[in-house]
Image 1 (cartoon, rainbow over the protein chains, first blue to last red):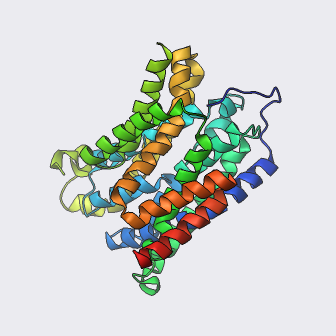
Image 2 (image 1 turned 30 degrees about the vertical axis):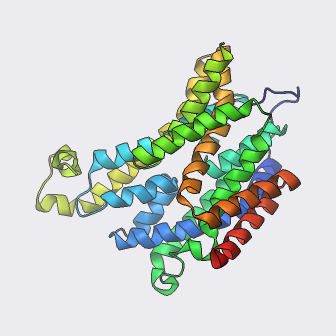
Image 3 (image 1 turned 90 degrees about the vertical axis):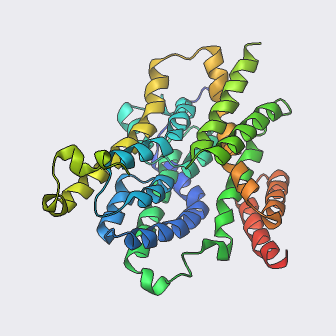
Length: 239
Length: 119
């Protein structure tokens, strides 16, 4: 996180929302493909369209929603589902903290309201915007709303019309859409590069993520990599 | 899943009542999921705005974002075949040359479609 270089105040404007929304549109399209997959799978596990839609509106976290489908059945293991959701989404804690420079300047209701819509995609775009001197925190809200709209409408479409979409849409690999996420995160990573001193931190993060991915279920590896890179950076700072 | 963890066990409702309470069950599960997720989204700001960070914590937070991005990318590359890895290289190259997210995204997706057909 780069320190605030400009003395301009943080704003929260409608044009910021619009800019965030527009910047996020390409990502919205690939989220849409995955939303269709979630909707199709959700009804296959016995969820109704309304229930799948309600989950996308209220939880709005793709990875945990897909993972929870494993638990879905006639009897629902409440604790198992809620704990899984919490753990899969723990990475949000670090992500929210990283947006401090923007959020801390806002009235709490705006900051905490905006955080409801924070996703991996909108967070990453916002970190780039913040890093390049953006002062309008509503960018995060706009980007989040974009993902929200695509995720919800795709859930409903997938859940209600899986029969005519058939298996074609359940295979995003056909259009290379499965790679879209990787491509976005690689590009953002390039933009994050500050110099050679970043390399050891990134290698530590990569090693921890790889270990976590190989040894742990779910999305723990994201937390592993984020924590390991951060801790190594902090340790190096103190030397 | 352990029976002790089921909603029926938690609420003391079992048998036919549990089936009748199906809607109630789904409602509470959805509410629990939403609350658990929002908690993770709000906690970062809540903690950081109450505890003023030391330089070390600052350094930690400065390195977390890129580390998270590295962590998201690595398993995708480990899992991917030669087509995905080559496309990842092309994506990175276009990102370095153009500094443009959309250009890199389209180059990457196009590359993966073509390379999957060739390799």
